[in-house]
Image (tube, rainbow, N blue to C red; front, side):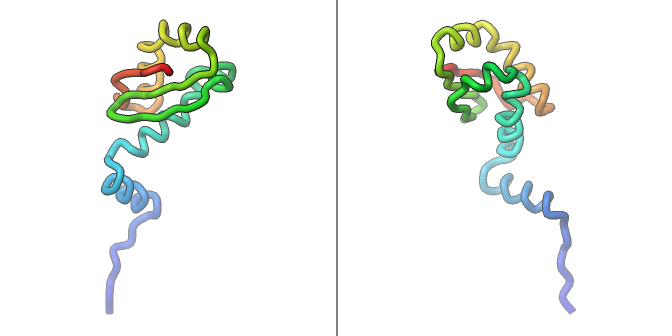
Length: 96
């Protein structure tokens, strides 16, 4: 008789991403998904693209004025986003 190590599907998915994408990958996805909750619907609607690489969040918005406003709030945004995930994922925010 063959016995298998039975694990919940969620644990298997997490193991897969940790092995193939790095241990922070799922936290990075969670962080990107919390962007609208942290910045609100107005800024979220003007956000064109979000990506994370090397602990940097790259944010692309469709307005120069909004980009300037966000520049003043980068440290607060970074703190609030990291708090939502529960650990320090971001070390910098780059606005494009």
